[in-house]
Length: 440
Image 1 (cartoon, rainbow, N blue to C red):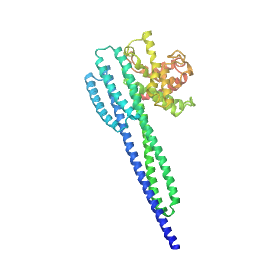
Image 2: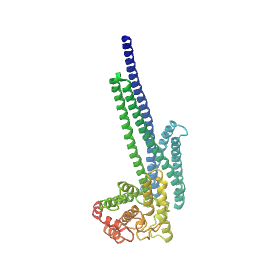
Image 3: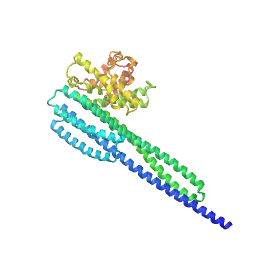
Image 4: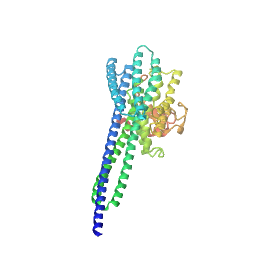
């Protein structure tokens, strides 16, 4: 009877150990398969991201050369035409790779439709620009501007939206992968606890193998977490580059090099940091608010894209009718901000960017435009933008004026305190005079 029990016990122990070892080996196999699947899918996602980012980068170069050819103000036409043809060839080669990537996607899926939308949008964009080039010597500037407004700007907006949506889908996938790995990790830990209770006699073996499996899971989890954080930073960087690229294109239409948007953004940040240092507007000036306003500042003149070249580049004083048209860029800028980044960026950031574009020409005394707002009715970000924008415009050379000296510009800003500008903002700005002189 005892011998029978001993044999039965040995059999039970052996079976328990065998089951424990097989269970752990099976768990290890599942983990390897899961990790291989995640690696394969993640590599595909990163390949898709690189492809989309390459297309975006080439479009920036293409847009820059197109603007240069149309303005004929940066390089000569022949050099720009060569650069344009080279960039277009690169874009078309990238679209071939783009089409190969689409073959691996599920037909009719959301991602496949977005990729196809980007593909079609880029081809349409190249075709529209070919038409635009053919118009530059035969059509008047108003016709060219109308063509850009009606066909190219909406297409670029849709194209950027599709590209941003693809980046957002990548971010969601990485986050989902991280969540799946977390869930898988919890399940594995639970399995280990049950195995410990059931397979007492295989404790050492179970512990060794389980530890290895958990270690691999944790490493994979860290990998996806780091990729998720890196992806967030990349999306933010892409968003900032998109904004700066569009702002540079707008500035280039009026003969600017894009430095105006960078200088005003820097001045805005200096005023914000000075205000925080002095304890001003403590309920508003959070680190997030300062970051959003600084990043949104380059979008303050996006509305100029709707202003005809004849008015935008007029060297003399505007007629009353021309000035009324020029004033429309403020309200147009607020709408364009929502069209470009609304729905794909943080709502608070979009609202701040829209306020800056819409209201940076409002005046403290209520005599500004577009709405005649006064005093604190004007958003703080727009009041700060107004000082930075006017100061940089005063000390910069424009098609209609020579640059003003820094001394005269500071004096004018002080004179307009309480009239054009918020007195508190002016006080903070004047307090930065030495620092601004040092950076000149």
